[in-house]
Length: 131
Image (cartoon, rainbow, N blue to C red; front, side, top):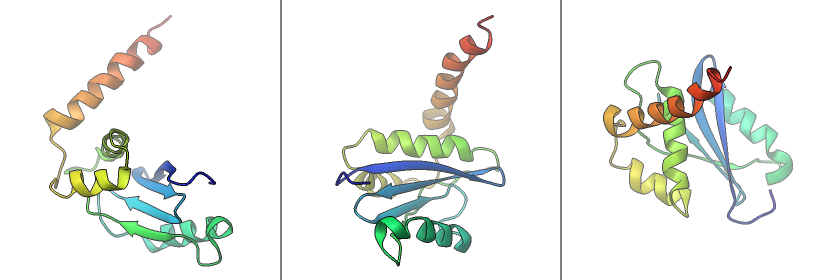
C-alpha cells in the first residue's frame, strides 16, 4: 500500500453476512455494515493485528459511518455492492460516503437494488446457459 490516496475495497463475509472494509493508504480503515453501525470487536482486533506491519504497532485508525441499512436478512450482498458502486462513482470515496449515506436510511428497492439485480442477471445468465 504505497500509493497515497489509494483505496482497497474488501468485501467481508462472516456467517453468511456481507460487510465492507475499505483500507486507505492514509492509515485509516473504514468499516461499513448494512446491519449495524458498530464494528464487532473481533473484526476490529483482526484489522488492527493484520495491518500492524503496514501501519505500525497500533494498527490503522478505524472509522465507522452511518450507512443505509438492509431491511431484511438477505440483502447484505446487494448493499455492499451498492456501497462500492456509489463510492467508485466519485473521485473521493470517503466524501461520497458522507454525502450520499448521510441522508439515506435504506436503499430503495426500485431505484438501487433492482437495477443491480437486473445487471447481474443480464451478465450472469448468458454465462450459465452458454452450453
